[in-house]
Length: 378
Image (spheres, rainbow, N blue to C red):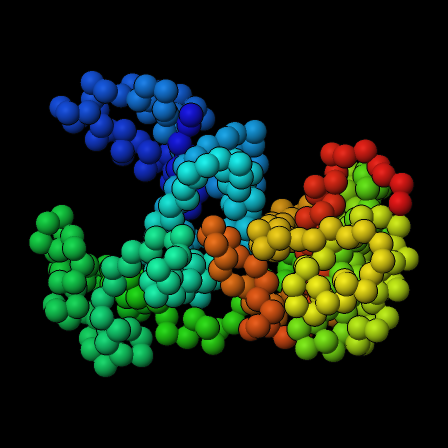
């Protein structure tokens, strides 16, 4: 069994692995227990049947692997799309393994670090939940040193907070970094472990360049089963049905139908010729009860995977889209929330109506899963 570890880049992951392996090699207590392999791309520390290896945080990493343990270092460096790609690589390796564990280690992030921020909020909330399956440990300076606080983050009292001061560094060393950078944001984030105070007010901050690149008027050639998904807006103001089809280039997503209200939705879903997915909860679930044809119900994990699938495929240029402006607008405005298992999903409570983006995401995920199956007549 191989245990895997990564960081913000493959180079950083190998660098941290090498530092750890060097410490093992120089430890009188450990060096005789481990063997080390240094070949680039197959580095490993072996201890009996177990091995620890680094991997690059890319969508194709860990393909075909099975493991019970993955660690991610410097998670603040991943934006929403990059973290989605990383989770898309990690999740299948642990899907069916009992006792699986994902450990995420990081200092506080920047406005770009939406994924880690949502996890941090979920972790803080989990401390009040005795049944939470998330273990959350935070070591941060007092809020008075934050960007909306009244204390000086460059003061000796603030810098003495850092656990390395007095051991492997000094307050003067930290201040020398400030001389190289005229802002104190790096001090607050990297040494005091403090987030910007306006993280939630800053919004999703999602880059639309990848979305715009994906829009096409002619889809690539079909290479599999067309799959459908529908969703109802949280306020029942409208609903949308989307289709997704595996193609020679990835997956193509397009709008089937959308309209105000929900009275039209059940008959429209009954008329679809192909597998249909939906969220079985809330208003979407109540509408599904009026549908007479078979439906596939998405789990909470499916909804998280669907969110990651859309973000990752857009970032990787493996999705194409033929949809109205509503999908782009909703994609830009949609917020995410953390879910159990360290994933995230579109947040219907904190977002405007996002029926288009949720239906498109779920259709994409379903098409991915049907891609390896034979075509089925409906």
